[in-house]
Length: 284
Image (cartoon, rainbow, N blue to C red; front, side, top):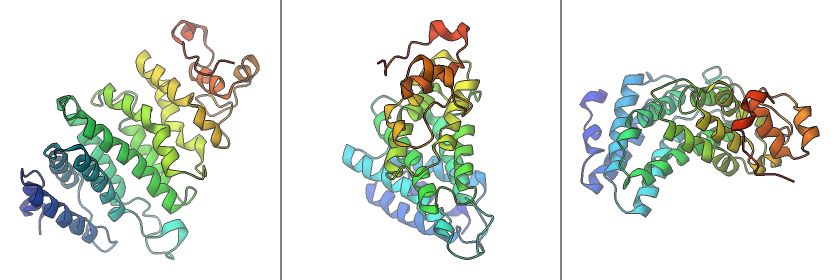
């Protein structure tokens, strides 16, 4: 059935909760039918239409517990589209496809959130903040399930983040969305990677790139806070990295704190930024 004629598009935004629940189940089956290699993938326009309907599906949902459950269900739709050859299993089938339609799904989500963000009122913001949490974590979970080092799935996902909510120059991305993703980045990575097996240098690169290229001091400060998170010490390879992923010996020498070394690397030690850099969360 063509997407534009599929009734669940309108039903997802219905004021009737039972109708929305039924439509969400139908959508899950619909996505599953398009996730196989022999099926025609949905276009970006189709995915954007679906996400507009899903945005209003959550918009119509009241009661915090129901909102959280729905946000988790919406994040669970990504599992339907995830590659089937987990951790290198499954032979040659699907090889080279990497994220396939899954990355298009993530892209459509972030485009929708960026477009709608400024119109979300204060009473409804919490449920969308939670939805963003769910989707940041879901992306990491999918990469962990496939194996952090298996092919280019992680690179594709990080590319989606770097071109979406962590884009340094895209004026269509509200800073409020950037701030939230930076604030929760380590939180959700930690939940998805309990064994601390992720290649942390690569995972942090979109954050470092945002810090290098942004023209906003407020965004740069938020990046420094994210990179200075004390929990990053739990991953191998993060100590002493600057924004280019190199060892910042000067920062280590000046201040033996891992968090300070990471944060100091954000401005490359340049004198012109010293007056703006007030991060001191890990002073000895």
